[in-house]
Image (cartoon, rainbow, N blue to C red):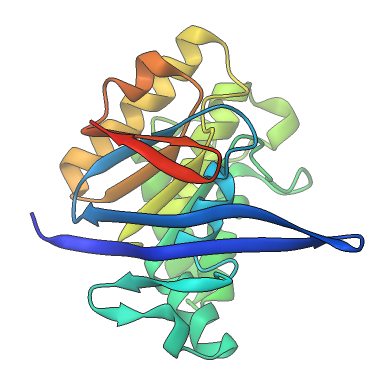
Length: 226
């Protein structure tokens, strides 16, 4: 494997009233292509903030995020949005599915935004839903699906535009133990079969131990890599 993502001496601060809150304090982290990395640590240590920076959803206060030798700091906002849409898939604890649309339509949405033709988007979305085991649920809307099925729709949606990396923020946090385990195994299968890079924030130590590597954070810093 070769290094795919690098966070170099990353700091991130936020204004809070008249003061400044420093969330990340000099994070250095390299992630190899095809690796499955779990980021762990107590609430409030900066895990989700780091994930947002890796996902080009925000910019560091200082330091840089580098993908395959290209610093995201060199990209303007339009270029950054294009990079994000073509390279990165996101999975969140709360699925953010549109309740008025079917599973198929939810997975089609990013493809249509990327200006794929409607029939092409429909074929890709249907194929992805079959891949995650939902071939019989294409016409169901989110309220008609279980929590695990909704997360599978969200996983299929994240795969839609063919990303190189999936960033997952507590993807099993809203699921019961059995369903969460099934969702994690699906992510692991996609990691192995597609060669996708995964970075997952989780409080579930059992799942973290089944990753390729665990990165532990405390007080805005990386304190351990195993």
